Image (cartoon, rainbow, N blue to C red; front, side):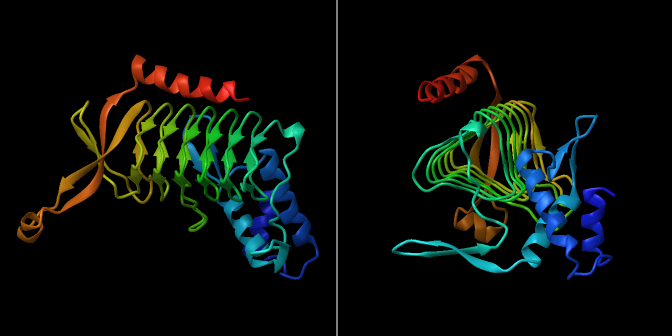
Length: 281
């Protein structure tokens, strides 16, 4: 029987909550997540992203079936969390540059070789950060978020977590994308390969994206989320709110505007940031 089958049996109540096997099953899940063997979402053979609801079910079972314990104290705080979810210890064999200063990588997350984590940053359970990516200062990679290779998550960017509903797609940032400082990505937003998000852009499933290159409006759906096309360069924008009252007060609502798709100048800027990062290694 597979780990997936075991977790779904626990979830459906086919294995009693006091069964001694449960702790071992959930430990196997957390270990597999840290090795990158299991993921909350990944591409299928056709290149489409598929959600693995059973992984999220397993993480939720960890929360539901464990107690909160002390995880150390300082002069100003006592740290407490669910017993299995201790911060990960990343040593030389992981080849991750975890810069001192208050970052934490939670148990059950995957961080690939070559990743740099600047302080203070946080990577939550179920997250997947692929090789040679940068998680900058004050950045969050939320639960089950999927970050590709050579991605730059800039300072203060928030990659939202999605655990429930278990079938919902997590936030995904594909390879070579750049997420600018102070951006927020939530509710299953998918940022296509090589896309560039300007600083301060906030995206949810209901944020409209006005593509000035192809004269179209991109909108998300609860089923498919919001998809930012590969290579798109997106900046924060605003659109007028209809109605007499809104017009009287000059009200507007946030949106995203695709001003262009990646070109030589954009690639040079992204490469420069990468070279600067590598020079610090």
